[in-house]
Image (cartoon, rainbow, N blue to C red):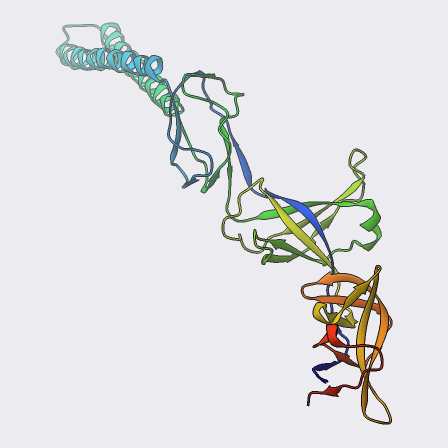
Length: 326
């Protein structure tokens, strides 16, 4: 029987374990208002990308706007007082030079003018303060990033301790993985962490950058972190993703799944051996480890250099003559 064969040679086989990772941000900012009031309007939704200074939430500013308007009206009156005091001082200066008024009266006019100027400066300062305070009623993004969950709703009353949302910057993401204690002795910085997409493909590969020195007593696991060099498409902060830790890439023998048969829980393969009359198929029991892609990793049963038969397996028997394809 014509058969295809494969000469067995060791090749690097990744030894891996899969876990669930949580994506977190290294640069996450809590957004809290600096004033109290009722939320009038929310301009963004969770997941939106915002730029620095972009409005997020509008708190009802009517009361503060009235305070600003009152201050501006008072400033008009103070400006009129200053103008009148300057006119009085100028008139007193001329009368003093003509000898019609005393120095005390001139000094009194000078004092009145300085007092009016000071009152105008004070009200102007108050107006600037109230205008700055008015700007706080529109909450803006302090930096560019992604908007997190927004727990407040329009009409809610907020204070300076209310968390409105979070802003997570696009750069500086980390994958948090809780590794069970049975793997703790295998952990070391620099091991590769692969993040997997919906189809199982690798969307990001990064080294372990942190290993916790203590175990979590509740989950009996060790926290490890891997800093992401780039942000994979579609990945969001606080998202759960499949993650694979690559423990090693040592050369090992592997056989294609199509070359393996299983009988009563025992795995078998056929190898082509040179006999007196030519090649014959020899059935050999093997022990296998993990399935990696379309190949079984072999622990024992066959060795390097043997010619593994990879076609017509179901038609073969132990000792059957075969003709390996060139």
